[in-house]
Length: 335
Image 1 (cartoon, rainbow, N blue to C red):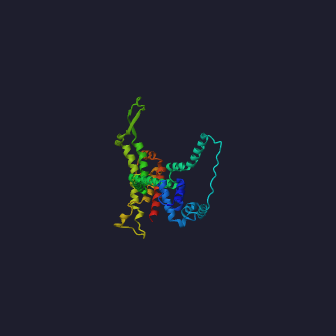
Image 2 (image 1 turned 90 degrees about the vertical axis):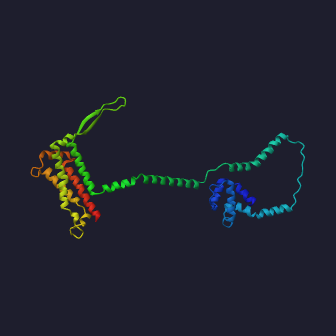
Image 3 (image 1 turned 90 degrees about the horizontal axis):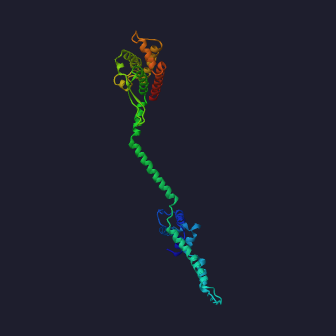
């Protein structure tokens, strides 16, 4: 390794050496110390001298490798021409020694200060390049994302949510929800909650009095409960299912013939559209037109039932309308 080229690389700061390494295409230099980086740059730049010698910013390095012809000529001329002897002049009045010593020390300090600063700069650890920091951040981000994805997969939330969505995405579930809302309103009237006991307030804990309630199960022994409940079962469940079973349009095949035998199992046993239409017609006849099926439905129970259902007759019609639209939409999607 040439002493001139080594001196030129040694005189550069590590930040400048990192920039030179990035410019000349040196690889795997991020973790190198300054002396190792100088040696790696010297070897790389010597090996690729033909490609890198045209770079003006590196001309000082390659001039020190090849040597400047002007300097050689000047050195040869200086070697041939004899130098005149310096005349010694003795001064009579010499300056005190205490004044000349600070000048000598100042000159020595000025002469040695560059080497001292270079050695001090090489000993101070410098931060890595921005590319190294960016790569480290990308690796940490990818690891965090992978960890979060693993935790999410192991929790089983995705599978549970997909199962719930699959269960709710059909007409039967929507009709069941409508019937549950009607039944909830009905039980709130015919099976009211009864006050049992109260937990007294506690000044020590700072809690107020908490009443405990439970359904009045003695209403199950009364005829009013069963007469009202039977009317709801007949008008909202049994009669609509009866008509939807026999007036089942899903049994029709694409060619217009009715399916028989094993083909019936592939279709729905109850037509959801017929169910909602028949339920709406029955509710309108019983609640609005006063149809009592030959006295089977008494007026008092029908009035209690209509008042107990959320929305009354309008609530039943809205629920059946939503169910009918859902069944039509589901049939279109299956085509």
